[in-house]
Length: 566
Image (cartoon, rainbow, N blue to C red; front, side, top):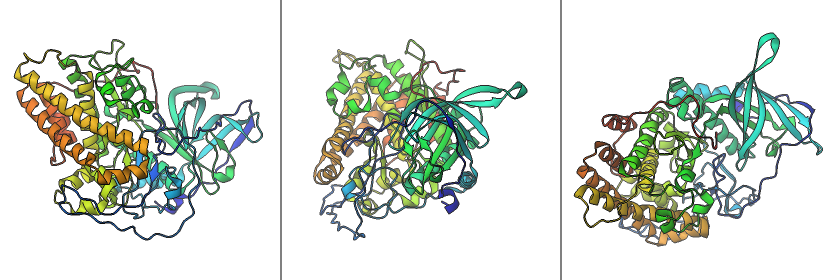
């Protein structure tokens, strides 16, 4: 990024008297925990030593790796952050990689070496415009000396009244604010509610990630037609700005680190509940230790496991794909999201909860430029929620990038470079489908079409069970130990075999279905999951569902279901 973008901007803070502080302490968390629910202000980054010889059934020959020599660095200090469930892991080789969060294992973390976040040509104007952003704040002195209760914030000539805090992540918080515009005779006229993401990055790489997220949202706002369904399914960029650390301003996460500042991003407030909580009735922290069989069959209080017939389960999965395909079709020329998970999708639906689901995607904090990613994948962190990792991500973690580059099956690497978001959406579609579907109890007298679905469901359980166990072991054993164990175990290869079996079972079931919508959802999902497939594209996903009558349903004027907004 241009130097003028990365440098904190010398801006003015206006301080007045008030009665209460907004800065709160963030709870400390043991190593191995990874994501604050919903905020995704930053991932967790880990750099670890490579192991020795590993043997892969796909490669045929052992891969021996020698640690690259790196300069001696002092260990990074421990950081405080709340538990989270997504990860950002340095590739196995110790090539310079972008570290965009507090390190999970500080003692193993070399000083970060930044990889330039090259933006695609279409984003150049949006990124450079960051240097011209202006910000100001009206705050009040709190009870404690030097602390402030933030009342109003001005970004790019627009004023926002701070209402309440919605949540926080490892180095940022999200607040609900209301834009104020001049009314009659100069009075302030309240406007729509907006979400303000206030980040206080402590390193250059974190600042770059904040800047890039704003650039992605700004570019999306320009390519998605204003007022369209697709434009309302992502946070809309409203304004952004930066405070220099010289302003001595206390944000929600405290004062800025010397040499850095506070980065503020105002965006539309998308309403809804996290999809994973809607499905299972529990949050990510529970899923880290929940027995896999209980996840499949319950009991889980307030879950929707087995709550719908085949048509109802299919409709929910089809709506998810149909509604999000136009969003990702627009995004793919700008960036890869890299953190698609049930926690980063919001769902709103009628009170009966049986139909009319509306979906939205949030949290672009791990996004990477579409053009730069294809050249820099091997030095970028492995990022996202491990449950939604493509096979290549696990191989990269265990064996390093040279293993993927030299693997005879280059489809694995192609999927990681070109279709990483496609894969995660395929997993999500099948997660929704099989979680909601109430499988017939008596299976002895089933017709071939239903029997094929039962077989596909068993294949899904085998695959998703593997993904969940890898996810849980990653958290339970810690990143370094798990990496070593993964390289020497058969768990990853079982995961790959079960994924292959799942794709085959989905296609077989699709061929036998009499309901064209069910057939389309299964067939499209198989293509999204299969690393050897280059289809469907996002346009083909939308077209394939439209052909069977599943369209991107119009959004209601206001959210039907309150919940977490972002």
